[in-house]
Image (cartoon, rainbow, N blue to C red; front, top):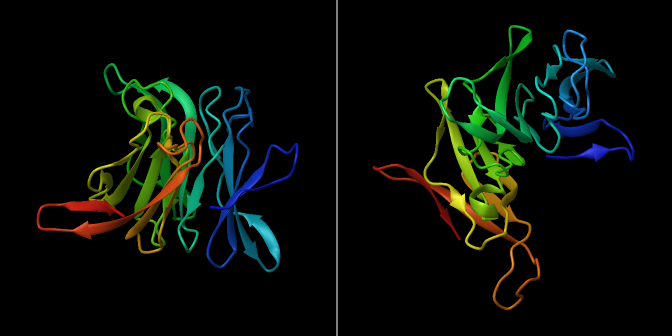
Length: 239
């Protein structure tokens, strides 16, 4: 993922396809809905494609829906061909209407360019139940084909944090193995996450990690995890 933002600007280039001809631009403080009404800081993400030397909008913009949702504020990820995009809204805490007693902190949606429009792949990936500051989607990363996705929730479990890898399979996003969890309170595991192009290697960053030799000092760390497959299940082995 890249982030190219002008100082004082409300718009950021968040990611580009491998050939550089498709890019995602976020405006997380946008307050205009798709219908033209005003709702504070819902955000929007717009896709552009370079055609004959000009950047042309690719389909309709993707809008947030509720106040302070700020979609695309921190993380957007594109597949290598730019035809699949993952968009997160990590800072919103909301009640999930179709799930009883479920409040989520953050969500991730994945869209595919199909029939000249952006269509959602599967359902939303939601933050853990009733954890106000999980910040699910603070970091996200798609594999090259767009069918594997890593999602960081650095504030989950009292800021130990976690990273979960998902695979789009049978029309749903299925967790692949166990999550990668922080081991120290306040390390914020998942503050950064990157998948390799084939989705077999995961880098999980903990921006505030401190160890016994540096108590109270945030030195940070990155764990490299390998996806392995057994007869029982897929899982991740961190080295």
